[in-house]
Image (tube, rainbow, N blue to C red; front, side, top):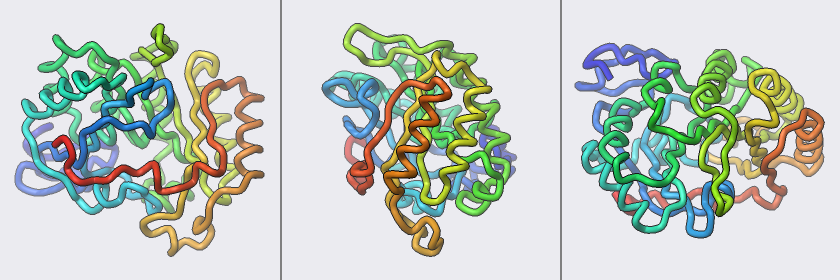
Length: 295
């Protein structure tokens, strides 16, 4: 990150993060809210023991329904050095993590890259870049050769929805380029003997209430960006109204079985394979305690 004029994320806010904070809410030092084994990710990332999840504070997206708002918008977390972050990576591996899961990493890309370079000689597990899909090519190219698995949540196709719920009308314009860059770096999915993903692109999509048609538009567009049979798709039905969702009546509910089933059927028609959740997955149970564990 440059000392002045931060352009790491697509907001390109130009903040001097050495003296203040950017639109991501963060300064120049890495800030982490939790670093521990986590079983809330897809089975191919968790294996039998869980993913080693590092939850970074701050976020360039400002989703009104964010389930991690305490850290993404509230700024909770502890500042640490790149050396400490590298130690955390290796400790999680020693604890049995099947993958190293970097959650919301974009705004700390240069620091994370340095920590990974420091840890890589002893790191034997795949590194997962787990983002909201609103990633700049600048940040992604810093990760080339350091990240084995990309895990973006491709949220919207419709600019009006993206503007209303995440304050980012350019969301899909940015995300489509990011997804293509991610696939360029990883290539087709590659599996390990234990069923743990070793390399590739897995695209998530969080179903939102009343947005079934946009979900289908997202999948249709994705099928033209990357080969459906060479990536994994994870359709998430876990949406629970959180944060400011109550102020938006149309999304102040859970998704219906009809919404889930129709989007899932369309994904199959397009040739995607991967994961899907039942409506019963909609709970706050996917959100861990942000209590500085492991930091």
